[in-house]
Length: 304
Ligand SMILES: CC/C=C\CC/C=C/CC(=O)SCCNC(=O)CCNC(=O)[C@H](O)C(C)(C)COP(=O)(O)OP(=O)(O)OC[C@H]1O[C@@H](n2cnc3c(N)ncnc32)[C@H](O)[C@@H]1OP(=O)(O)O
Image (tube, rainbow, N blue to C red; front, side, top):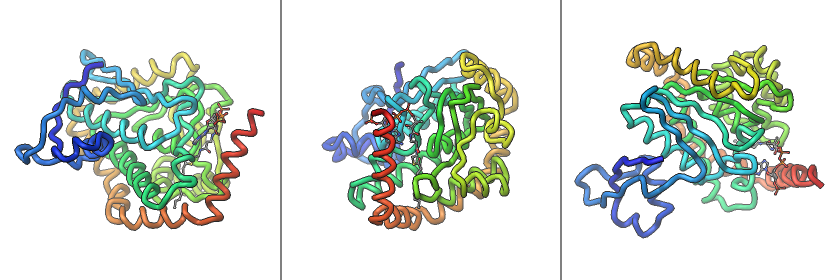
């Protein structure tokens, strides 16, 4: 896919390709005329996020492609934010379907290897990227529909929860939920807020404490997803739903979405740095590191 947006980046950043990618993704770019160098975003062909635009329909399909399980690595998060920003700036696109290119997995959630055995600076950088992903998706002006074509635990569920509508494949092996407590960790307040806004307080309290992973029919009952369809109809159903939502005038829908969501997003925006510090000190604890290591080991042993 050809993406031709032009971004101005500080010339010093050209020395560090990774920083350049991230800076562009996170909006840390010099204002026009600020002495930067023009680079075409086309040069950073995305590998972890595939975007298939359909300008005639005014939509795009965004597919996560980070095999084997679409874990949300720093790289994937960065590409996701870049891709979303490009779509937000593309006047021909009004709605996006978020789905997976990995068979049977929507996303395994946050990448445990980014949260295990690294240093505090890495944890801080990673958490900032997780926050950024959530804020951008949750406050997106686009209509976002999740086509959940596989398992969707924890951070995978969070991505789906940021969308305006969720369609899930009817395979009972595909589960969705915020299962953090099962790993011995705690879902941050903004994960919790997003869940409460979707399924209500009591259902969230139960789901979060027990780390429940819901199969599709139960997810539908509790309101975590809006529609369950056969696997081969997930994307087409998501596109139909997108068309219905896009029949509403953008400005009215966008202002309404913002009115509903801004107070929740503001809670994080007001304390981003404190939230990062909290994450870094929590995840750096020996006991938490041990829990995560054991969980990773369990995942690996499952195979053998
Ligand atoms: C103050 C706040 C503090 C903390 C908040 C932190 C918040 C965290 C939110 C999260 O998202 S934590 C991540 C939670 N995710 C999970 O619990 C999912 C774990 N994975 C699975 O349950 C399964 O892998 C699956 C159902 C997604 C897929 O099953 P299957 O197809 O059988 O694949 P495998 O289990 O064999 O996995 C293949 C491969 O991938 C590795 N892997 C799986 N999940 C992750 C992950 N989240 N991060 C990194 N790596 C993951 C797994 O270890 C296998 O690796 P191999 O090297 O053995 O191939």
